[in-house]
Image (tube, rainbow, N blue to C red; front, side, top):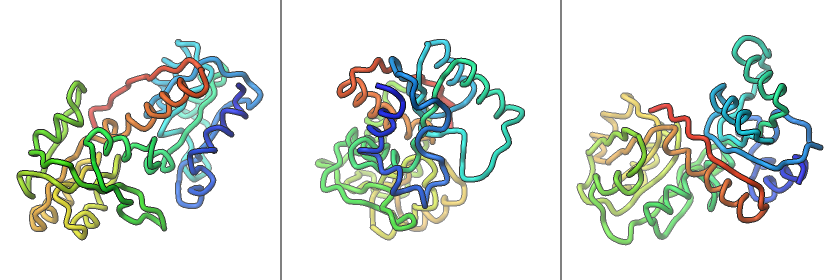
Length: 253
């Protein structure tokens, strides 16, 4: 399979074209020759210098990330940005990024995979973002205590999730928006949910959550966005038979 064919395969199940008008990320191939063959793909959350270096050292042909290098405006290829791009070019390493289409995919998305881990049932789209339901809400088959939710989602990972314990001690209804979904807590409150899960923590929603009586779990931007790229990694291994590995470069945030 070459990069052109891989791009076509990704677009067959990820809404890259559909979300181009609302996503600042330049989704799809950001660096690379579409005619190059792919024998190994590595997956990571961020296209930082460290992940690019590791991908190159692993002799990968393509690095698939959630957060790429190009975000909705012209960007001079100088300084640190130059170092990243040059490293990729020097090692003939293609870069492929998928942002919002991976957050919200109903099967392979970050929100969907977090919902899978929790075992959410009766799932629906949740929280409108420029005409798209960006998150997922649902119901637990059996109520869980707050600490049980945290353990279910993050056991075994080096992470420091934070909980605002302002809602019911036993949780039944949950809304999930991975990454930077702090402002969507208003939608979780409007829906009357017991728990809202997102990535980034914010002082700004503390009193709003307290006064509304809702639990909010800040899982970390990085930790809530691992599972989407890993889901695509598993799909690549199963359907394409291409060697695929995950690079873990946690930020603690």
